[in-house]
Length: 509
Image (cartoon, rainbow, N blue to C red; front, side, top):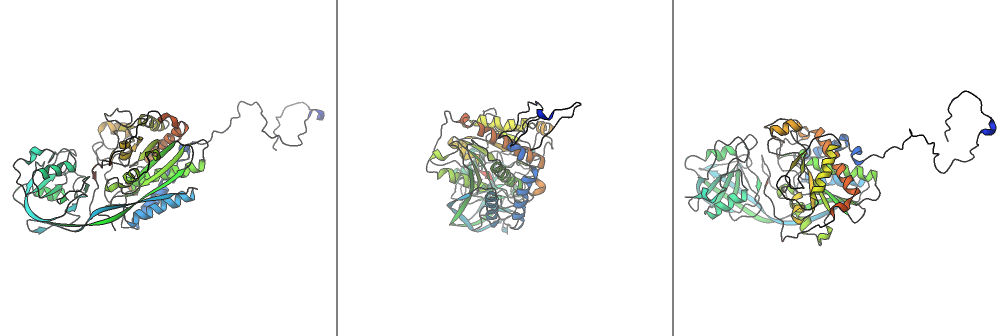
């Protein structure tokens, strides 16, 4: 025991001293108002840039050892899952994986010849996910293209209206420009007009030059190829013909979703993000950043080991870049929707180099509806930024990420997103910094999505906001339980995705 004596003038009689034979069971209350108990650290306090970047460094190294990709079904993706499992195990978790086997048509032979000249796969064209097979030749008819392109992305409405196909001759090959409507709308309109195949070329802005690799959301009976802007634009004027060979076979693919859980009460909150990248690059922002954020929160939460907590579940989804496959498979194969979480936070692309902190809208202020309780999650994430004295914005509910399935079944959902291929506005640049008129992420779905594509300051701020939201929800989970309405559709609707590609982009067996 350390005894502190105040110094003063005068004398003290030895009879007045109290002898302490044994220390008291409890600390002595000195009554000193200046002595305060130290506040325990919050989860946000424990989140550091060093911890976040340590995980990203590991994922970058895995990509570098595997042809610069961590795409679904590749060795890079499997090693990324192994890293997550090893890190969770070291933190005290007992992680597990759910495997889902999918059957899909795989392209085994493909060729495109324009006016008798063979085109280069990956450089000039790629197959689009959902394409049908075919061996055909036909004349090319351009459908309402905008060449040169508009200044802004999605300014072309090529193929978005049935009227664009007036005069189209059945059996021709439709040449359609990427733009303001979904790929499937373009293909459906072409089919209705009698097209034998569809060629969708990129729109032509600086970040829309490469062959379009997209997900159609369904499988069609005719070939659908994505072309580079240069090739597509060269076919707009004059008469041209194409010969297409595309054969497919039915193959099985395995999705590997990774989970960990910190058990608690019957209330369940879930944090998720996809672990896979596109084939074109290692995907350090998309979505190494979200994966690393979730992993670091899991590690630090286990170290804090808070009492009276809800059950906290963490998920790293597979196959997101091919149409939200992992999260959708998990939701659709649940035996009971009682196993769904009470709340879901999604973290996908949280460190864009010219990004901004956008919170998923939960109260309808952007004109979009989200499930009941989502407004509360939005508030909690906003509080996380307020505590850092950082401004934040809103984005409509994000359906093209793994949050999409949770929205559809009625789970309260929110998350953080820092922007992808769209351009930052002047108002956003004024509020959040960065360059107006430039893409939030110039390397979105490209080979340059590496460590130097990460805004580390933004990354840390988003992680701390996410940590606050998790901790705040955990303190009062009942906030979301009232009047929750779950919906079980026959099948979840898959939004179309631009998967981005500069080279051959197929799952590897």
